[in-house]
Length: 217
Image 1 (cartoon, helix red, strand yellow):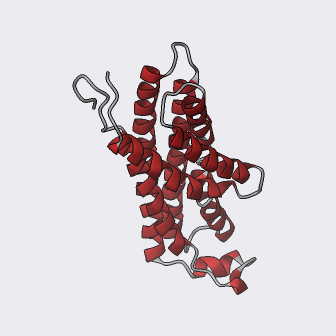
Image 2 (image 1 turned 90 degrees about the vertical axis):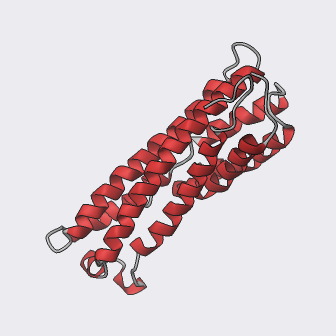
């Protein structure tokens, strides 16, 4: 995955792929909630609005979360290697950046599992308990979206940029902005919005490392 004699760019595409998969989650999640305001509080009425098309949108979230999970780990591994080459020996920055991406991948895998469960419950909606089915959809729209592990990656890149000179200062500025937005999702009851913040952040980071200047190996 690395270029010969220099830091390869393949891993940077992992961030781009993860971001695009996050967009896929946005697109697939919309049709999972075809409900009217009058349906709220009546799970049976909400389930009655689901159909086979909704089932396949649940399957689409499973696929998107799977792609996001693997993309996040590839990007995290490459970012760790890049930072290890640029940061002082013994710095915690490379591992912290990787762990943030790893947590993002883990939460995406959790979303993948919830997409599978929602798929089968919608497929068997006539036999499923409405309360359980709607609970599954609610969890699908929450846990897999918790990309707050990126807060660790953002913090690591801030240190790498302003304290250790391991990445461009503009990456540090971007990481400060998105890190603060990610922090806001954690101090409010809207943690699932971390995915909405994470998508543009990873798109920027992925493009920066995929197309930016190479670093000698």
